[in-house]
Amino acid sequence: MTIKTLFLKLCIIFLLLLSLPAYCQSERFAVQDTFNDSPFEYELKLLEQRDLHKVYAISFPSPLTTAFESNNTVHGEFFLPNDVPEGTTLPAVLINHILAGGFDLERMMCTTLANQGVAAMFIMMPHYGLRGKHLNPRGILESAERFISSMHQGVQDNRRAIDIFISRPEVAADRIGIAGGSMGSIISACVCGFEPRIERAFLLLSGGNLEKIFQNPCRETEPFRNLLQKLTEEQRVATLQELKRFDPLTQQEALQRLSGNGKLKMICAAEDEVIPPSCSRELGAAARCEIIWLPGVNHYTVFSQSGFITAELIDFFASNPSLTWKPSANNEKVDDRIMGLRLLSGFFRDLHSLLGGVPAEGCAHHMAMTLQLAAEHNKFNAEMRLSKGGEGHYKIFADIPKLGRGQIGQDEFPWLAGANDSLLIGSQNAIPGHNCSTFISPELLMKYQMVLGILATGALAPEMLKQVAEWTVVREAGNKTGIAVSINHAQFKGRLYLLFTQNGQPESGHFHIKNIMLSFNFSDWRLNAPTPATFFSPPENLQSQAVNQQDVFRIFAAIFERLLESIN
Image 1: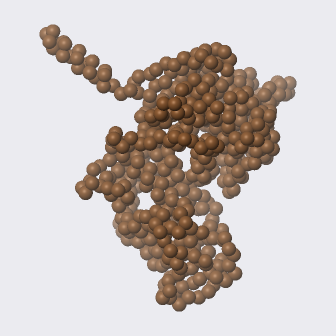
Image 2: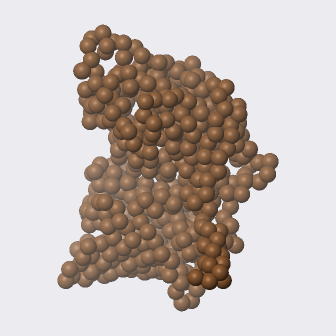
Image 3: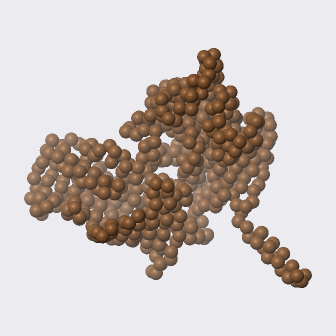
């Protein structure tokens, strides 16, 4: 090999090293002012550059050293909004994770907050994730001492994470919050009693009285019950007494301080089978905090309310006082990945508004589409038009095989225009404020709410789609953009293609799952379009018949259920 050849190869290697993405690099930062007067260093490694924020892997030494080396380093992820102006400081939120430890919920919460201009971080609790190389979470409950020690270590790790927030120049030291869901909310409530620098707390599915929660006969708390059964009576009493140190009820003074300033929010499921509602009420009473109850949902179906919960999360941490700055997209550096994400986010946002949103006053949302369904050897064509106004007004036209052709709607009263030019108006025995949801089975209504929850998540935190799907952008003729999405979830696999106009409005698409193909074309897609109230009135050219309001609602409910069953 000649010197010239060697030199050229070295140059190529050098250039390749320079071209390595930033996420291969890491930085270390020193923290001098700490809760326990013990300076330390933390490490940041860029994982992903997103449209509105960056995601870093963060790690730092735990304040407590255990016999398990991997557990002595705290790992997590730090979400920081892009291009924070010099001199601007942001609120920051520390999030504790649920018992399962998959971190999807926490990533979604952090993503949503960072997109709004709030710095966010979640950390892995002792023996979870990267900390569980030598002992996994189940090993925590092998002994009472280890369990109590892990609770103590988790609190100390939280305090050190807050040290990091305060050391950051872009974080407002007086606006540091904490949040979590389920077990994460219990840990967060507990930390409030140990950490006076917490300015507000958001507790989802939380409760107090840990002994009662852990004795609740459900699958999630079974390991703790098994631990107690192995102990002697003396050991059991001592363990439960020690556990009270970390019970949210014990932290009532700190929680009352937050609640008294409007800085504590509790959202709970009315039918929670894991955190008993009675335990949530105990905590609410101890903290003097009024609970927002979500009716009809349990510990897991609460995801159907994710749109509402996410909106509450954003409002809680981005207001009182309101944010003075939010990150904005950099339109000068938009690659295909970001373009695809923006279009998907907008599509989910608009679809969520069409199905579950409320238009501005004097306006309505309008959508019209044709569909072609091919399944095995059968083909069907259908047409649908949906218009949704304020005050519960709507109008739907449908021409669907096996369901027929007709219109339903509601202005002052619900109405149905069907076969033979018939028109039924539910004006008899009408009760203001009632709707057809009363007559829809709770199971199917929950599925509809789950769909709305998924759409809300896709709109507010579109980056989370990466957990279940991959997408590519296709440049089409006429300055149109296509997005091919491959969904690879364990319980759901399929392919979706969406075509958008130059203005980002959906035009057409198709969806494949197993041996089914659904194609669709949009002829109308308008949100908050000025619309007169008379638009939702029943057709004037038909002979009307007044009937019982509930009878019309039952017909609506039957149609709605048939549609949901078909989709399922």
